[in-house]
Image 1 (cartoon, each protein chain N blue to C red):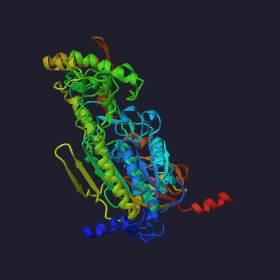
Image 2 (image 1 turned 90 degrees about the horizontal axis):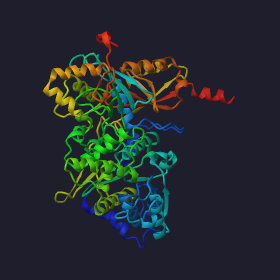
Image 3 (image 1 turned 45 degrees about the vertical axis):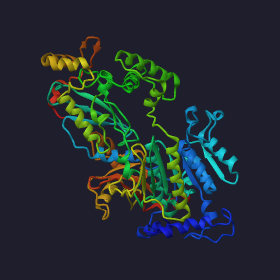
Length: 432
Length: 187
């Protein structure tokens, strides 16, 4: 461990700069980058909501010069109490764009780019151009996606694809933060089971013995809605639809002597809204920004690797190192390469995998992207994918493709890159 | 950070590939690939796959209990948030069962409030089979069926039998789910 005094030095050196980030300053990090260069590296903020607004403000005030922000949402009136980069006139506009414009007005020297998109829609080059990612998300789904994607980048591109993630999350008076260094420490998926599940109620209680207003709302949204509108998915942002739920739920609540059905409760239950407190967002976002600063400048040791803020029963902070899970489906996934002729059949590839010294698989099942190539079971899926066994590999995928392979001998999946041994020869013939 | 990575890089030379590849499988897909291909084979259940690994149907022929002689179909839909969230399972037949309503909703604790990420598809399949071998009238979804089962098990058995052959009972029309003499034969 680094001693406290040594910790202080790095950060004091930053404070002793004559002016923030003067050009002739000599301080360089281990890669020979000046502070200006360090803080000019591209940082992506995922989410421009409660946490995102705080993170963006903090990054700008800390001296980050090259910020990207991505959010697929537009501003809702209920956001304005805590998402302070937005005003009433902004309601309905994309969060990322309004937030970026605010920062641009306040600090014109900062290059800030807004992306009104889903994280899944950004190209690989975009992610490769980043140095660090800070997440201010409210969804486990999006976190799992970015975590898996960043690990894939690290696998494929080495240092160039190595993008640390600083992930913040809050729920009422509680919050947490993680520093994820792909393949180096525990990833998001390693600790997936520590995240609380969605609140649900037994379906029989909802159907027969409601005791809470939430039970009546779930009755209306989970049981009645699909029965009355079998072809329409209930949309939590549709005022008319939520009003319908409120109406149905109120009627049911009345017959069971339950009170407390309101529009906001109904929307909260339907959308599974987690209560947000502005100051919790501020605490977690501040902690995230400082870690981002330390990681990108190398000025001080950073968090290893998880922080918990518990403010709902007394108040304490806990930091702890979360260990990597060897069986993790994301970072525990091993990668290997196999060379085989493009004329070989899938059957021959499977045999090669079984005979391969490093893999030594028993009964591999293979998929490519989202296509099922071959499954050992269940019987009907085996039958359905069996015709593929006779097909030549070049009919199924290109050279260099990554297949997902599972096998009873492996605790997790294996990524196998299949290179065609006759690939160059083929290329030459193709160009003739 | 740079040092750690450089070290790791030296440990294992990282494969670098220039050409573009389609996005790899999601964690949920990888888990399902492993789970499905390694499911314990049961004589009374059959998995019917679809194009997507995230959707499949299951046929179940109970070998004992009130529902012996029938074949029941269940639709499984697994979200990208699996196993953080449970699979969604519906019974596609209209059946008379204390824990299943006519819309196909199933009252099984591990499908909702008691789901844990350590559970899997196999656990859900076992849970569903258990509901048919021993319906649970304590936590009913179809209240009338549950009441009948407690008060008059013989009458309950009779109603189950006639509902399974597709009769209308009260104002509900049930599906004929009988598989007849072939029942004991393997698929």
